[in-house]
Amino acid sequence: MASEPTTVTITGAGGQIGYALMFRIAAGDMLGPDRPVRLRLLEIPQGMRSADGAALELQDCAFPLLHDVEVTDDPLTAFNGTRIAMLVGARPRTAGMERADLLAANAGIFGPQGDAIGAVADDDVRVVVVGNPANTNALIAAAAASPDVPADRFTALTRLDHNRAVGQLAEVLQVGPGEIADVVIWGNHSASQFPDVSHATLRQARGRENGMPVLDALAERLGGREAATAWLDEVFIPRVAQRGAEIIDVRGSSSVASAANAAIDHVRDEQLGTRGVTSAAVLSRGEYGVPEGLVCSFPVTSRGDGEGYRIVEGLEVDDRARGRIEASVAELVAERDAVRDLGVL
Ligand code: NAD
Ligand code: LMR
Image (cartoon, rainbow, N blue to C red; front, side):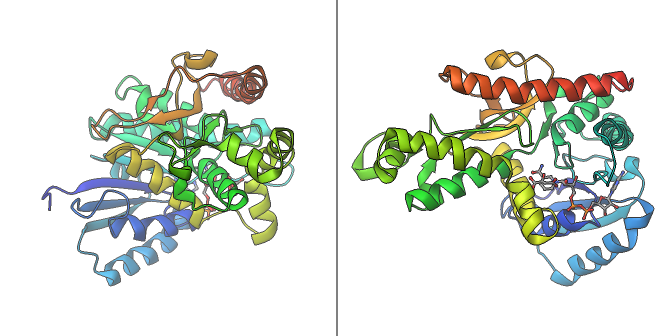
């Protein structure tokens, strides 16, 4: 077992996703069975009792990998020496709140947290933003942490959307989710995102060496290429893109365990390496025509070599896909511009 614990900070630790995250991290699900962790749990004063209670429960689990836990409402304490920062706490949209108000409220959270990360985090810190609007909150935090932390260390979570897409395909194709490779989520973590299966394959399908294209498998299953395209346009894409709203409608509150699971997948794969292509919102340097500086979901891989996620370049994007990606990117541009108008960037 490595002796030096890795410091992991969770913000919004007294909330629902925080609660679902911390026990799995302490059990070794995120960084593996040989990496001890030190947990730093950040809350606002109103959330401290809940986070304190969770910390008591962590102690009662006696996790061998859990070195220590600290609950605080001070960002400088929470991010001190942090290697992995999971920014979950955010201001939710409330009735009558305009988009600009939501962005302003979250700028007031993610700006100061970015400042604190820039001031006191480990030199090799990696950040994943879960709190919505996740892509733009990551942009705000990255800008605040600059120049102390390179902007490409800030990512936002679209792995939940990726996993949702895999789950839907697995159901219709009647295969295990582990069979499905190379799905891509493009754009914003919002209803405008584009879940793209055009490069996806079934890993072991019928002995084919390079797997079977998911588009062929869908055509076989649904009665032809046209039926497959109709299912993708009318069922799959809207269902994945609006799954968050579906969960809120059915459960009465937003996704929790699946969001925490996806955040763990995101960090684990970034740290330990990916098997095939996955999706994460990362800093654009102009890839696929996405304006430089946006935090946009792309196809990514990681070698687990400490360099983090790399965008997979050179995938073919046809006109229909291009139009969908551009629509979601336009929303990211509008969010960025709204934040700029607030004087935050
Ligand atoms: P929650 O309301 O249960 O918990 C949020 C917690 O954050 C609260 O305890 C609150 O006190 C705390 N908080 C607020 N401001 C804070 C600050 N400045 N510093 C530290 N803590 C702060 O919400 P939840 O269900 O845990 O969801 C958290 C966020 O994750 C929401 O924004 C939600 O929309 C988002 N979310 C994102 C995804 C995704 O895939 N990206 C999926 C699901 C939910
Ligand atoms: C989700 O995708 O489940 C959430 O982002 C939805 C939300 O609005 O919290």
